[in-house]
Length: 160
Figure 1: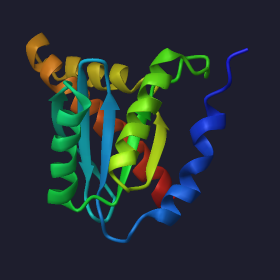
Figure 2: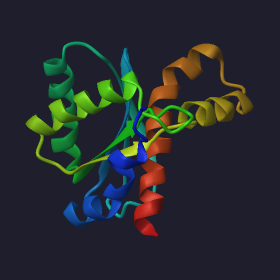
Figure 3: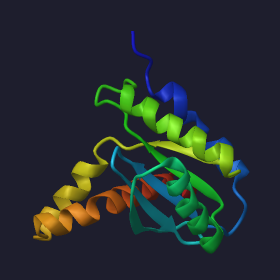
Figure 4: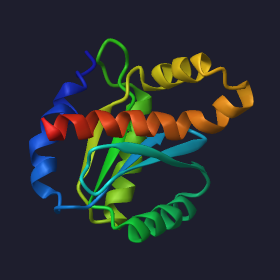
């Protein structure tokens, strides 16, 4: 039997919030096989904004770029989208994202929270289609918009 995703990350919100320094932005991640979408919150953690998409390469190269963003924006915590299966189980993509987060946390000493990313790409794609964006523009935007969607969900939960 495959374990339910909730056992891994849903109960972390209070612990995550307790570890966050005051008035620092959060950095959100939508980790894919080829790209990493990034989003930033404001220092009050009210709104998430799409930031950029990194084309994945060697982890050391990706890490360098992420570290620069963390230093530049004085990031206080990381929110990583967790690609849970629609039935709530954990699959191989979750294992890959979890390993990415472990590697990241080994080098960057910041609190990390996993957040359910089910439907995030579909939600932002639907919005982009409604805005009549071209296929090319949607491809350029989808990862960082999904990261923003994921991060906004956590920000909303933290504020409540």
